[in-house]
Length: 140
Image (cartoon, rainbow, N blue to C red; front, side):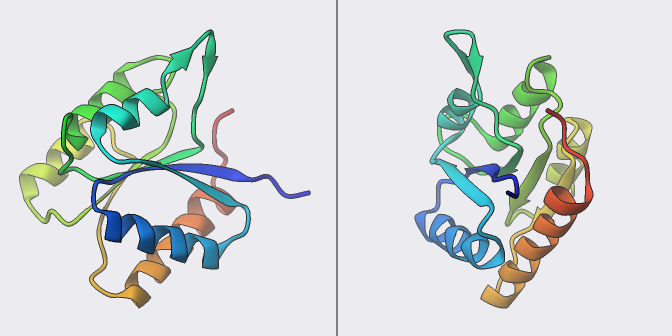
């Protein structure tokens, strides 16, 4: 039986969340999305509770988030020894060179701009699935 992969999507735009849910459902039945609507909720969803860590296999992270910014979420994930190995893909509309540079300085595993079309989003989801979930070996 194939492994089910859990992806944490940290995204505050309900339309983007809905599209991601639809495209990942189309791409693979072995992917479960967990949704965090802001940075604080995203960090809470990967924290350790009662000695048990609820870690996703992969994080898709928007940068422009309420409460705690995506840059802060990324830095927090990567500086924590219990979460630093979780691959984090920044998936954002920002094209700012400063955002790209800061994301990689904070050890993002990839920086993807949100595609502007549904076909582009489906293609991105397929590529994420093919590389991160089928080709790469993930920790844990």
